[in-house]
Image (cartoon, rainbow, N blue to C red; front, side, top):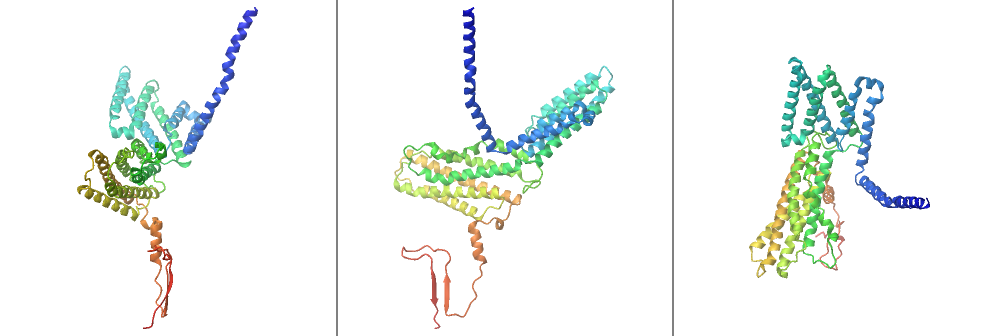
Length: 481
């Protein structure tokens, strides 16, 4: 007996030890999960608002069950309103509105056609009725599924076709056992409309997330990332690598890589934006397709930049004379292209016409590209080894392509600014232009009969020699003679 009790005690002791240590093991995992939740909310607080909106919409639609008069009208069909909220409520207004309209029209058309099919099947007799209904269900399901393979239809109306197949099949099958098929179809349509309307109203009125605005900001951010890389490329390419320097020290040069994989996001946002009503500065029929065009050109430029990034760690083994000749041109091409891209990104962000500085930077980059082409046509290589010349020539070719891509992006941005009615240049003056405008507005002093003329220079003038005072205030005596 004692040995049996000892064995039981040992068994419980061994079983208790893992349970006792379980809280200690779970504690770091719970802390990690909590930190991830906090980070997810901080990265985009709109996610928290979206979660609360979905919960609110479900509660509102649940009133069809909670309130007896409503439940008596809709009955179990009220469940379709709950399902509509779950399937339709999306993150952005455009996605929610698009899905809601697709579901509503698909339910309407599917319900109407199922009623027609049921009436035709009833005319064929009691024995042939299920056969006819099965044939109609087969025909519409096969045809609708095949239509879903068309790329344009799949991109915009895939969800509508799925709902159409579901509605037609369910109402047709239900109508075979229930004579009042019109009542079934009307209840389903009304509950779907109620659920979809609740989703759209809550999505628009409470912390709306506009897909068009997200697309607008994404395109501007992508162009800015390319500009940041190009502005620093010249310095990094000709810089001598330091000992102990890692890739993490130059992580700011890797931001452009997100542009390479942004195609699907841009297309999704553009499709959702087309469903959205006019809001803010994005009016009805805003040219969303132009954003896709700019995004495509931006990715083409990003691929060239990705190739340039591969040459950052290449050691330039050329003569100092040749290095001096090419360094200035390389730096100017890269720097001016980067500045032009950042000006274009700023114009998109502020929804203003591109500033005059954009055309200046483009002109400078194209001029540097021509100078580089002329330089290579001359005998710049000398006795340079071919292995050392190839990387330098490849980088030159890529930079010329980048300049061409930058010009194409600029043309598309100018087109977007024109079609979207971006603000005029006067409304978006840069600090330099504002200063010029203020100087132009100052009227010249009236001519006075005075032997003394006082000339005041407000802004510092660069001194020619080190002994000269950059700010001058002088009085000049004008002789009467």
